Image (tube, rainbow, N blue to C red; front, top):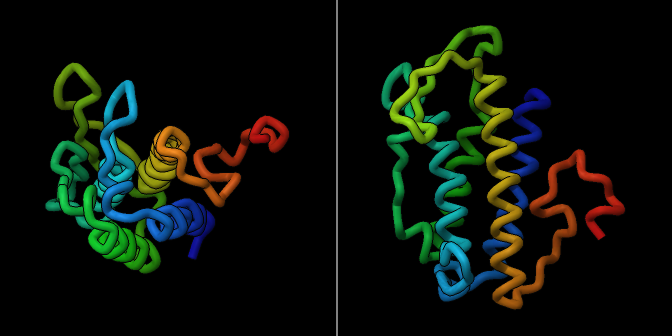
Length: 164
């Protein structure tokens, strides 16, 4: 494997410990202000992002066509199964790091078509995941759920003293 794939796998594997310590009620709890999103909705969103990369409908990666399987948001078994599907696909994912790929997304002003490389899109996926981990960490804290990973939700470049 390469370092980029390994980095993404390292980040995604942190979700196992989070999902394993939740029950369906905590996974789907939407009471935390101000956005009232659930841990499950963030997990589903992260995995949908990877799904678009790993299982595109065509030669174009279209982030506006995510799966959005709501069962992943409310059922720990479904969330684990989806996570495992993404991890297994990523382990065997082969790509040409020099080849240009087309990515579609709506960045707020309508659909854009952009030229990326797989290195760029996988780097974006990893950063995007860490960003959502921070939100999950916030929700867990508000729900009084203990987080057993002191690195969860922090970018690897964050100074260790700042995490404490």
